[in-house]
Length: 271
Image (tube, rainbow, N blue to C red; front, side):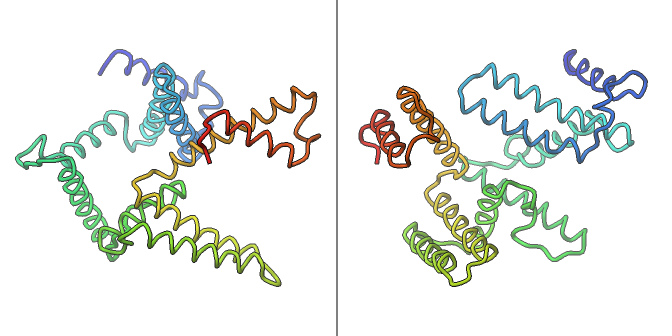
């Protein structure tokens, strides 16, 4: 084990030491740390998207600290420690890469993906058998994933057994159908939030399906649009500020004109 990793593990143990440790760290458990882990993972993704590699290094350190935190809590309860975690994932990687560490021959990256999924499917089937539950193609797609990510995974799993659209045009037809059903609920004599939410969910699921068919990550696409909106709205604010006004003092039409101008200055051919 490297000196820095050993040092980090020692620091974590000290933070959790009832005799002189950090009160906040001592109060935490697996459930309270989990949201911080999710946040740190998103911060890694954000740093990567920004292209700032020093920020990536910094955020990866924060994410690693989350694993160290779990390892220390597991050690305190006699469940596992960092070495056991590392050993488990090392064994899993060797088992899932027999073309690297064993006798299996894999010619292409696509072959590797298929082989990887076959191995994981066998592992899921063994786990289902051990639990006494009937196996499903959807086993292992946990409910706690971000909704967009889970939608993609559910669709990919179903597609492997043939439950999938074959052409993007078919999905576009489905999207139009879902928009129609949502419109019906919005314009109903007594619209209900529950039914509108249900139809909106169906529409979002269909849009994710289209993104998957086009080989576009919807999370990445939406992140890009979020960044674009942020950038252009700030230009709207700057335009109003130059007039000595704020958005609250402008009409929607005035802000829309500034928005269109921001789009035109960014990229003249942007629709």
